[in-house]
Amino acid sequence: MSPEQNKVPQEAGKVVLSKPLDIDGQPITEITLREPLAAELYGVPLLSVVQLDPAAHGPLIEKLSTPTVPEAAFMQMSARDMSRLMGRVASFFG
Image 1 (cartoon, rainbow, N blue to C red):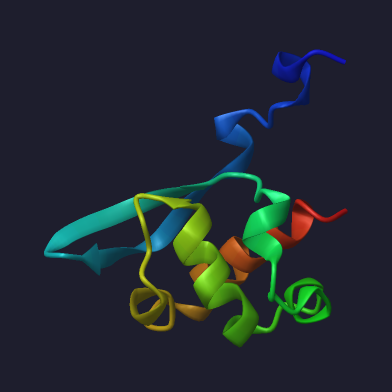
Image 2: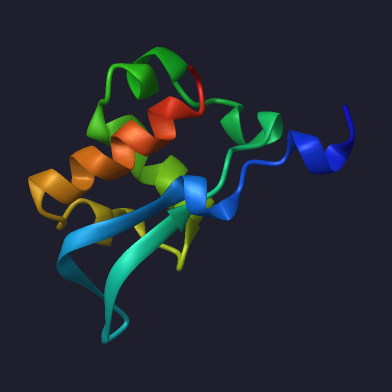
């Protein structure tokens, strides 16, 4: 399999937010998540990620999101948007 075939399309990780998220004074309405690299998972409690524990997802989403969503901003999201982002991250493990 070529490296091109192995890539996750950027659209596959796009999440449209139900409520804009304020990051550095900018209203963010969509976030793209990329598939994590193995090295980025070092020290991450993967069982907690799969179980959709927000405490495990905050630091991981900060690493994987474009634009970058700081952990503090992630914790201020609506429950609906937080669930969508956590579900998208969990889908990378399935």
